[in-house]
Length: 134
Image (tube, rainbow, N blue to C red):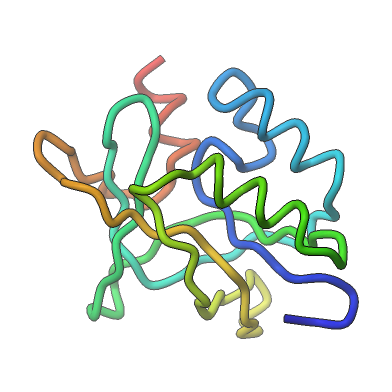
């Protein structure tokens, strides 16, 4: 996506600060990437189980809060993430609105599995939601 390595928007257990949620993969991701900043994307966030899933939305006021990471310039880490996320997530290109208002292109993982029993996270912020229920 960029010569310096692709950008990835993370919104759940892979976010920096989600220690105790998706610890091993989150720690590996943080160790191998550079934090670009906070931002949000258009989408609706659900609590699937102990982890979240974002689904696409056409409503401009449906926003999911997360972080943008710059990955190393190789396909290895993206392939590891694809395997980690599994068949219920699809990696898609999205537009992230950064905290300073800049719009950037990044990859993200969108939930494509069933939403049976899932609860919407109204704030769009998984970390705030996880802190509130712990």
